Length: 258
Image (cartoon, rainbow, N blue to C red; front, top):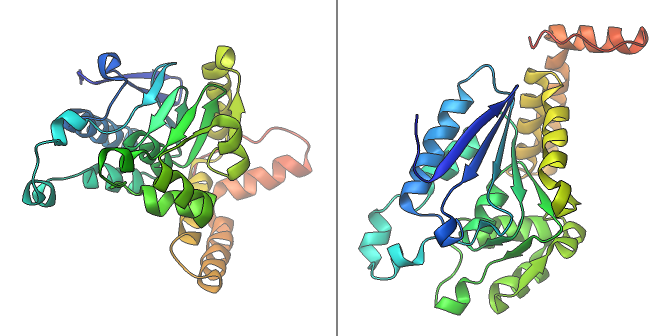
């Protein structure tokens, strides 16, 4: 399908979705949300794809929601709107690893969108923030919730109440970002990370996603039980047999993805 606000491409078993609103620093419009949700759903069902990467331009991953679309809305307009709930559900239910590759600004809805992904890789020019307070609003796509879980109450309060930006180094130290790479090598590094994820067993990667996400939704004892059951169930897969045999025989595994 041809899209207006995103560009999709596939390199082997990796899909890359690039936001394509350069005139608006990739601000997230209603159309972009809809097109992104559609592309993600399509890729989720494509057996040739093992990893999905979301990215923007060197200048901006996404500089927030499209304020021009929202400024004249009333309470009922917003209450009855989708307000990114479909996109959040698609990302939540996607069983394939989704990596946010952030260079430049990831502000407001852009920061929230990055946090919806499984993990964030950042270029050294990346800047993260929840500046909604500066326009008389507050984060509405999970910014007060996911950010607090990732960086802790104090830093989340600081960012949301002051609207300040966090650079890539601070984001990595705080746990918001997994790794930081030089801008000039950024997408090559991202593709190497994605390729490494894609090189592993598909069903085991799915199980790991479920386990990590479960840890955010439940207490420790329930999470440990869920993890234990997943660990036990992996012994019913061909890939467990192949992976352990390959380790003992000192060779690369030939995954069956079953």
